[in-house]
Image: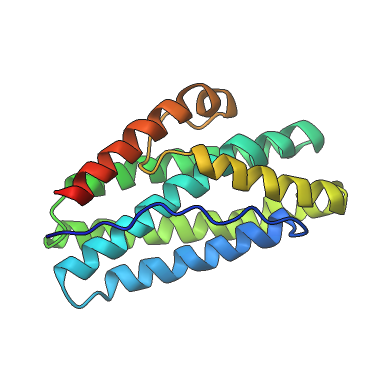
Length: 193
């Protein structure tokens, strides 16, 4: 029987800066790529990929709902940086969706996962070197803490699968909860099979 990890909700914490929170998630994503690629057998690889896919989908949706719009609204000139990150997120969602369709045991899956890893890590580095410093420089510490809580709340309603084309905050708020419900039901049904 295949078991899929549940999407567990961590308690919402206060006092943590959004940049620290997202950078910690970037580290977890980096580790999940390595764990997926280094998995000893197909079942472990499938489990690790499911965790990776879920974390990527939830993480990017929360950023699209809360972080990118705040940067665009509050920081003059940040729109260019945000637009570039949204384009990267779209491309990653497309690639992740394609990976979901492949058998985990074939070479094309591994090749695609390696390409996705490179793109996601480059995206994370650009967020950390371009967007996050803008947030730290232009937002007050209290606002960065409130933004971390907002990201955690957004994660609770975020879809667990990639949905390319739903990168704007408006689209995520309008479609995200519905997509999340469908995704989580699909995950539960797969876990019960």
